Image 1 (spheres, rainbow, N blue to C red):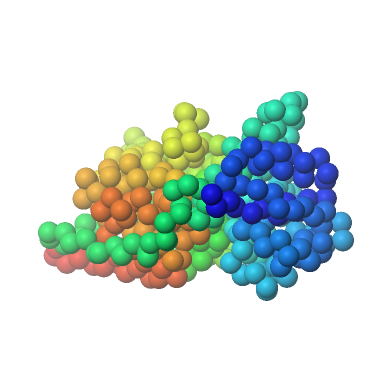
Image 2: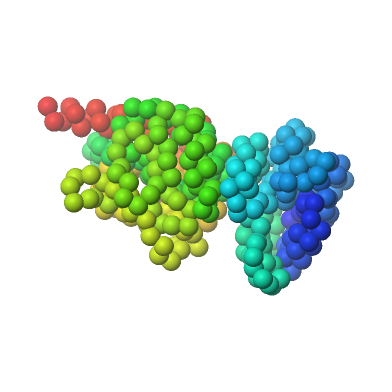
Amino acid sequence: MPTARVLVVDDSVVIRRLITQALEAETDIEVVGTASNGRLALAKLDTLRPDVVTLDIEMPEMDGLATLPKLRATHPRLPVIMFSTLTERGAAATLEALSLGATDYVTKPSNTGSLEIALSRIRDDLVPKIRALVPHIGPARTTPRLPPVVVEPRTHAGPAPRVQAVVIGVSTGGPSALAELIPHLPGDLGVPVLVCQHMPPVFTRLLAERLDAKSALRVTEAADGDQVGAGGVWIAPGGLHMLVRRSAGSNAVIATNSEPPESSCRPAVDPLLRSAVATYGNGVLAVILTGMGQDGLRGCEAVSEAGGRILVQDEPSSVVWGMPGYVAKAGLADRALPLDNLAVEITRRVAGSSLAAARSER
């Protein structure tokens, strides 16, 4: 059976052993080597030929941030999963690593008080990411890889409804995808943008700050009670579901809660999309970007039933074509587009629907 070959890079002997032990129980994953810093890891790449590298950020001699550009220069498509601490410093370094070409990240277990709990957390977080990033592994992966799915544009009777809100769902590969998309949206887009990115606390605030510095739209981590309107992007806070609701007046406001995860995620895309449909009806433009799993599928069903429109990132430009793939294969997507075309398409649809609505009101 094909296996995913993993190179573990961390200066801590304890962490290297934990990762190795966590992965050893998986029949479709093998640790083919370890290294205590980036320099040693780079020297082993051609010999070990790993399918995935797990990379620590803080290491002596050559840390993760210094290693990434050199690794990308010789292995541009090799998946790299960062190992990060769940701290502000760790979150900032992780986002920088993602901007330098890291594929994804997991957070190191801390204060667990138990070796078994630490191993379980590493397994739960790391194993699904490895399997998603290495499509050839496992007993069901022995058939030749199929060509990318072609999504035929959906046809609708009558004109498109006026877009009142853009709702974006994204997971694996999301920070880089959002950095490509959000700064290319115009400051006069005219509708609010609501984003659910699967991320823990601290990370989402720093992600919002990084995007805000590069964008014409104001980007913030959402907070309960925030008024929602044109000119802003609200990112769901880590650890909480984000909803949008009508206030006592006509304004829309953010509501957050800690209800159980959906699709193993909190924040999750599905509850956000459902709330957007309840608030804006057929005025929702859903955009599902790269990500593992099928969060967003049920929400897109609600968008479609209400008469809203749905765009997905196409397979070739996605890090993992899970979330957008499920929506596309269900026949819900109006179009599947490369990441670098989505900002233009979103802008066109918002502007076009507003112009059509203005004409109909004359």
